[in-house]
Image (cartoon, rainbow, N blue to C red; front, side, top):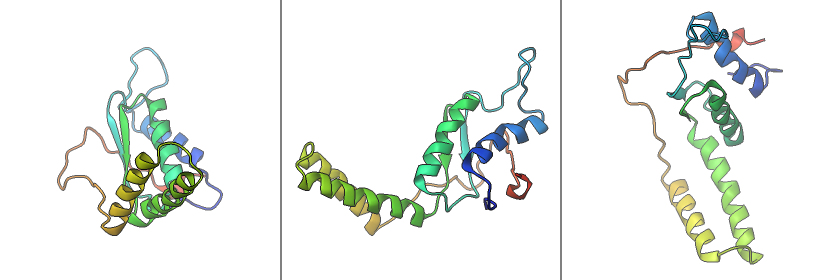
Length: 140
């Protein structure tokens, strides 16, 4: 859990910091190591992040040269974001913005998920190149 006063940017900076501490990432160009390069980073342990925060965190993995990022969030975090989007898209339709059929198809898909929420998660027993554990209490 993120401690009071710790920002998402602090977490973004903690990822390379803890990798450097483990020798998985180097700053020097000579003999460069980057465990993240070309890999997908999976992040767990922050289920209650707002989706906007998750987008920012996932986007920041590109700074580590990662190919992509997946963050395990709670259904309630995803639902909150989708409910907000449903309201916005319906308002856009009522104001004549864009193609109403396209927007309403998106609304329908979001409402389908909200009625029967299912999130992806890592396969049990999945093997990883490396696991970097970050104790949130150590981020100050």
